[in-house]
Amino acid sequence: MALLPLNLDYTDKDFASLRARLFDMISQVFPEWTDREVANFGNLLVELFAFVGDTLLFYQDNQAQESRLSDAQLRKSVLALAKMLNYTPEGNAPARADLLVSLDAVPLVPVVLEAGRLYETAEVTQRVRFQQLFDVTFQPGLDPPQLFVSVENSEDNDETQASNTLPDQEFVLQGSPYIDGTLVVSALNGAYTQVDNFLNSTANDRHYTVFVNENGRALVRFGNGVNGEIPQGQVSLFYRTGGGSGGNVDAFTITRLVGTVTDANGNRVNATVTNPNAARGGVDRESIQSIKQKAPASTKLTDRTVSLDDYEIGAVNVPGVARALMVTSDQVVGIPENRGFLYIVPDGGGVAPQALKDAVSTELTVARPKTITFQFFVVDAQYVTVDIAATVYFDSGASKRATVTAVEDAFAEYFRVTNPDGTPNERVKFGLQYGSDNTLPMSDLFCLLERVAGVRKVGDRDLDFLLNMVHGDLPLQFFEFPLLGSVTITDGDTGSVVLPL
Image 1 (cartoon, rainbow, N blue to C red):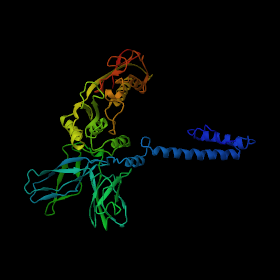
Image 2 (cartoon, rainbow, N blue to C red):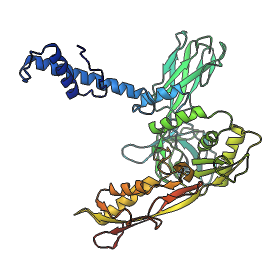
Image 3 (tube, rainbow, N blue to C red):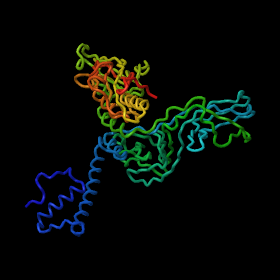
Image 4 (cartoon, rainbow, N blue to C red):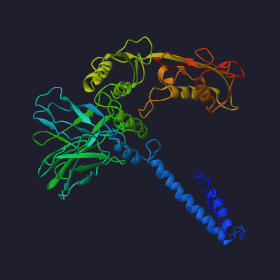
């Protein structure tokens, strides 16, 4: 008799299921064993085997999950899978600011502020530190004794590693988080240049690659002597770490100058510092969700612009563009042959500035040339304001005004153009992308309202929930993009409109 049934369910792998299957198998081999009491030592062994099986299968399932880009949860797994697609995620970018440094008196001799000098915000804990990028000199007689100094939210790192002269050497930089593009490498045999890979490197090319791991540390790899020259002697590695959105501090917050300032004669000089404008440009490393979306899309993007995907992906890759839709005669009747319209939504919505449209055109005609016979136009998306009106019955004891505020927040999150990590919010899109009927589904918004804490129920679905004063799905033109308008909530018990906090 077969010990395993022919229709074995491989998804039924928890402790209870394994225990039941083990007892079923045992009963077929030892039918005389009918004692299922907990005190029976055989039952103890069965439960022990089921526990071990449950644990092993749990880890197997998680390992299988981490092998697929769409399901992986660990950054380490996502980075490895993105590397297979030749996609390099974006790392931290440092914020920059211009500081106004003032001396307490007109200098009689030069006063030099060297590059690398540190400045900080005034918090007692978790101060944000900036470093000076260039030398600045107060010349004698400067009145008023003030100069602007460019600073960056980063830190210099200088390491030395000894080459073992073996192929495929790898060095892990100790500082983190590594700022992309800041590494400068030199060895006894000369300076090295960063490349994406060694495929085109010859034996005499001093090349290296950089891979940033899940901890923000950079792994530097050199060639094997055939593809990329092997470094000799001591290898010098200079790079910068830091960056991130935490460096985007407000104006007048960078007020501490670390260390002392001296003039050319070595005399101490009193100096004060502040930032008249906010520090900007700090960006956190690319999120896992963003990598999952952009890595597969990168395989579709070539050095030419031909398909609809080429236009849309290429446009979104331009900084400042949140969403894009390319439309030709294949999608919309009436558009002439060999012409197309590229509708774009800038970050935050609204009308795209002409400079952004020009940048998109340059990207798709110069950086990634289009076909000669095709003509396209970069145009603004047409926005449709969605006004929502609903009758709501509130939970007993719930604050009605606080609940309405939570309702508005939920709808605002639903209609935002991009998610906080910079990825597109797939719940809202151009009319053409909603499907054959080009409609914003009312059911999604109705169910969202029902799930808000404090809402006991929503009124009659056919009468008490309206989009732009009409019941049902909201029709959109192919080029229209929905934006949230007003939200009006009526108390179902009193019939009066409830205002938010």
